[in-house]
Length: 207
Image 1: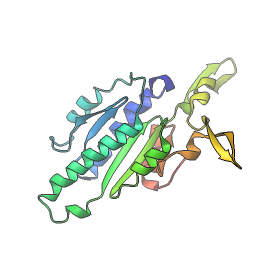
Image 2: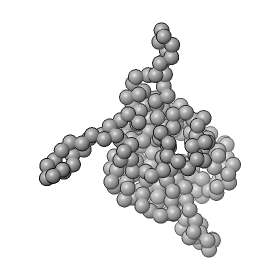
Image 3: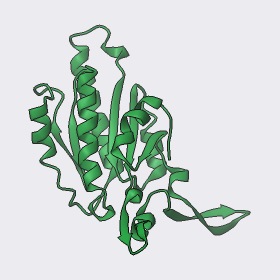
Image 4: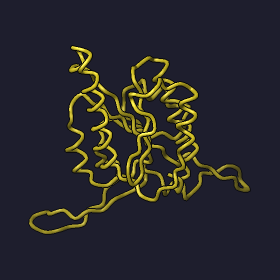
């Protein structure tokens, strides 16, 4: 995240999302950070997620890890959600019908797409992936403001990936956009945090 110049967006986005969830009274809120592994910072069984708790939680984020293991994070977070569902089930007859929402905020770069698709088939958990993209970055030149070339290259929209596939019995190298095989059904590429409320309520994929 730090190398993609998205840190300031990454700080703003969880603050906006968690604040919106609180105002909508969606229920219990948990916050975690992830890189090589996932760390739960505010659990479902803790005190309500107030502004003070939010400020304390967001203060822990550093965006310094060099590895982002999205698969491990998804598997671990689904276990946390399942545990929360089981606790709720002990006190409510309708807990079995409970739908849970998970919002992932990251730069969208992930491996193990096929394995992720298998894990994501779990029911009653909707996962929305907010991709923080650096394409908005600009620099000033003698002719005015221009888009930063390195930001464009680092944009998830521009990134390609290569893979070997078997075609007519022969192995061939295929190049495709990273987003063409993105394993999450519900995602949005966010280049401006001001647009987040609109895209979150639209229910659409956006680029």
